[in-house]
Image 1 (cartoon, helix red, strand yellow):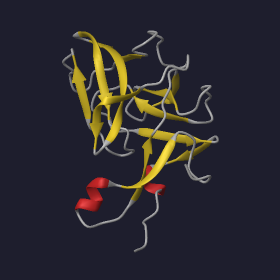
Image 2 (tube, helix red, strand yellow):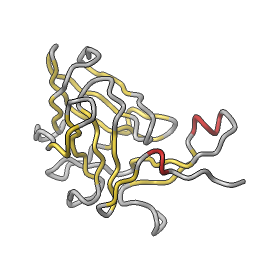
Image 3 (cartoon, rainbow, N blue to C red):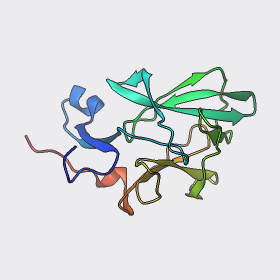
Image 4 (cartoon, rainbow, N blue to C red):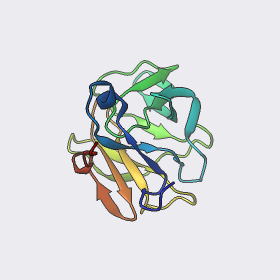
Length: 158
């Protein structure tokens, strides 16, 4: 990984914009950990060639697993063993140790942003925050304590 890349992330040309002819740079989560250090990268489900992020969730209809796209800004997910209801708030656990992920901050939708760590050992300086409400698209990336918003990603020049 290049020295200027954020901890636990890779910089790529966003695959959907590449297909449409654009070349916008974005981030892909390449390392992701629970608070106890278990890797959440899940190679059995991939998104545009990148391994997903496996999480255990508890919602209105029980407990199951979801796999999230690791591409920052892409809101794709795969739901396993559970039906999700748009707008419901989930409890998110590590699929290996069952630890509930801590709250990073309030989400603008009224739910919580939960912390997924991008470094090991886990720290709050290098993490992503995802909303625990089904269908909310808000997410944040923090690297070395600085917030990276999707709108801050730069266009690449040919």
